[in-house]
Picture 1 (tube, each protein chain N blue to C red):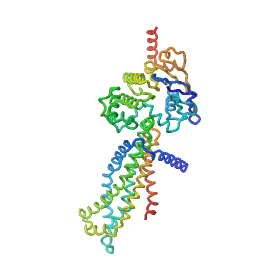
Picture 2 (spheres, helix red, strand yellow):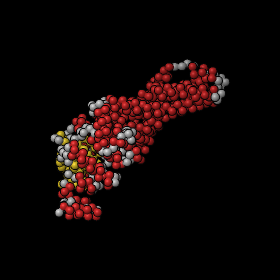
Picture 3 (cartoon, rainbow over the protein chains, first blue to last red):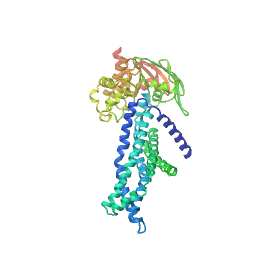
Picture 4 (tube, rainbow over the protein chains, first blue to last red):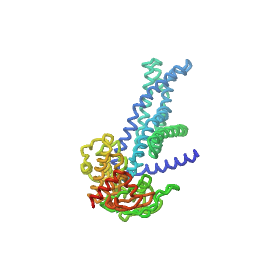
Length: 248
Length: 255
């Protein structure tokens, strides 16, 4: 039963995406929506990304220095490990899990409320392809802004690590800088950016699917928001496995 | 003119519409009335294409909606305006932006021209002063009037109203009825109103279709409805003692 329902949902999702990826009726209106979504989903997430990344960067640095680093390890280990964790996993995958909660639930509840208050029916009655008008700008808005969020997250994490050096005096700034510069592989940065593009598509399209297909009232909107966060988080974790293997 | 022929609709094993045939003429306000669960909303949704009828046909000025392609339906929808029970205004847009929306989407007019047209529609419903407000900042009756302005802004040929008076006080209901009726006559629109407000029936019902258990039980005008001998219609109309007394007074005045 679970598999049949999952297949039905997947079929409905593909049909919806077929409607979403069609030429917008009015490019002027599309770009207006696109800019608004970039602002809401991308710019609106900068604060939480910077805040969480700063503390995680700081905590990783402290953990490595105090609990893992030992006398026989080189002094650059803490900085090096912090940089690699931020670049390879946190700033792309974990940050996208956080965004699945913030942006995903925002998308699902917005579309769900529009559905239950007949705003989507109103669009359809005007002869507007509501799926394309509402969902396409959200997908493209998040996919466009997510590389910048990855960069902000990495930078903020490194600033957090420096805070442990300058403010907490956990390690010296020189040792940290040495570690951050040690054997830097540029591809790791691009790997994070590429992964985040896939995750952004998953977050926006899956959340939009659950919101757009809501039937019922406010309780169902809440359930749709929860389902969207759970489903997109699961899909991010699964696809992270494959993408990491593929890109490494 | 909209003609529906032997329209039927079933959901799994439950039949909701059992062969409805009627004609809704230009420039007239046609009302679909009936008890809750009689199939009014389903009929309206089948007419506008939000639901697919099981059988039968809906013809818009000689164009069969049921047999149209998806593209043709989309184009025909641009000739329709609809006022939803909940008004269905876009929360994130101001009143003016709501009214301008269909023009922004489909009109090739300049921004000035679109704004002027939207303001004229808002002025027609008496809400030009509320142009900069958001739907959440205005009353339910005002929201309905904005919905009317939005529906008529692109000059539709067909106007559909799903219970436009629900949740409104009697005085505001009269304003909404009067607006719908006058706009219909003014622009020569084919208007279909789904209602169970008896004040609407006697004040704006140029053509009334009474549904009973998914069947067209009675059709006529507002002048004929009070004298009808149809039992189901009478029990529906005269369910309220107050209305029965009012109808009796009206009959006496007429005679």
